[in-house]
Image 1 (cartoon, helix red, strand yellow):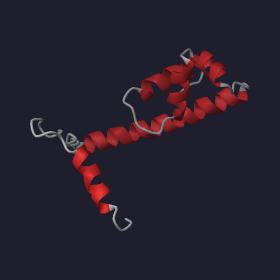
Image 2 (cartoon, rainbow, N blue to C red):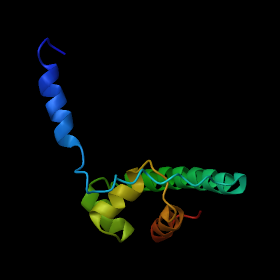
Image 3 (spheres, rainbow, N blue to C red):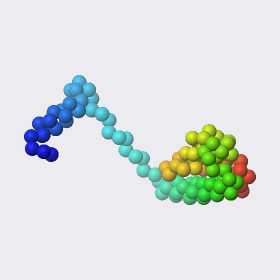
Amino acid sequence: MRQGDDGHHRDHLASMRLPPDQPPLPSSPAKSKLTPEERRARQADRLITIHLRMLIGRNLEERGITTPAEIGEALGMPVMEATRLLTRRQWREDDVALLQAAAARLGLSV
């Protein structure tokens, strides 16, 4: 911080405070801890999704289906949904079922 700027910095921080009549913002909810069994099930789902994404991606590439529009059409879903399903990194509960349906639509045995 440059000399003489701390007054401006304090004013900026003061303007960010809540008015006294408003309750404080709730803190983020505590993450519920997964049981060891739930962790194992989620890890198994992650491995299945990785396998299915690779299998589907390889099959689409072999068929020359490369554009998002073609992929969406081949999987029978909207373009953005198909793209997100095949590229997302975050685990989602319904991904395994969606990927299994997409693989079945392509005629892949899983």
